Image (cartoon, rainbow, N blue to C red; front, side):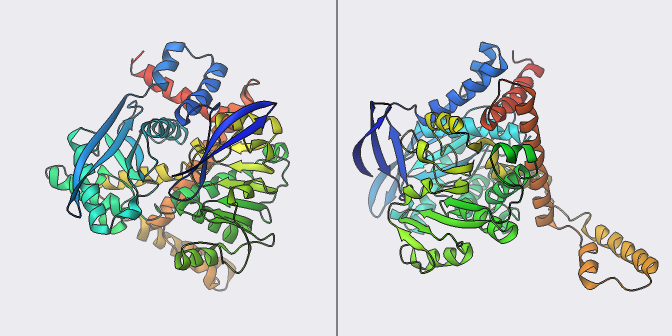
Length: 500
């Protein structure tokens, strides 16, 4: 990591900070007078608990992390033994299995893993996914190892998790995160299958797998698609738009995206191509691109795939200090990279009307308070990026039930559509146009059902959050409303089974 000491001056106080450049090149500010990621999550939860006047014992039980596993294991790489460190935290088992991704990163640590596990608990409750919260990480830089080496390391890590009871379709189900993807999930599932050959549900031990290995259509795009659905639902409520000082049409809104990885790419692509949102800046590891007329996201994505960077992209202006683009004026700011991107250092200079947290924890606790005082509306991570775990739930259900969605009813729906068209044609006295015929006669397949289920989930969750926000005069922001909604469900779950 590159480390540069700096000093900040806020309200005449000196705030020491370290600017850290992670594996992706994004700046992660660690400001000394701000809490850690885990403590920041707990402080946001405390703010919600104070509004709820929840019993302190119940509150402590909900906040506490049930268990944390740290493993160290050797792998022989290029003739030498290397020892790797990994973690898996289970924050809550009020629902089973516990669910959460596994990230591979050179900056991974236990504090981060525990914070992300806690977020998963609240996130699952918000979208009514019956899982507890968990998270894992391996301290590794994947770029330093080839495919075969990564497979050996992943299988060895998986073996440790299985042996310690931190990976199974019934108790703890990982998914992809930063540095991992379908490939790693397939390796993990295969390792579990060989170690537990009598478990007929072995394929459900992880989600985010390739479709031909038990995955589900729409999972890769799920988090980005969920961000789009969250924004669409926000724009359906006039009072919320008025509060954010936004006009009612999503089309034409100026948007800045930080991070064009899986989540940021899909969110930006769908918003620009389907909703007419204008992407005026994209922040990546090597800088930022700015074009007030709008950036073609698919074209930029193809350029990044070919050139491994954005610096010489011809259709926008490049600036080297990418983090500064977070402060550019816009309607919607979507931080989709990593945590700690908006801190006490730059919060006061943020010039967006609406911030949508596509990443986990991109806004620190201190920055969150500054942004709230400025009147900037924030759609929090615990809701905004819940699309991934929602579709992971659909995949897990598909694996447990051993049948793909749509298999039982698709043709039946098509036949009913044909019958509707015949009735229409008889009533109208002429043939129905081909476009309408195709639409009515289309039976829902797996991808249709996944998107429909995700859309419904994001809509209902936001409506619950709004109801909480407007039913309590002591709640003034969506983040607090989100946590109150979530904690209320978790507390009810504990009370109903007699834990308290």
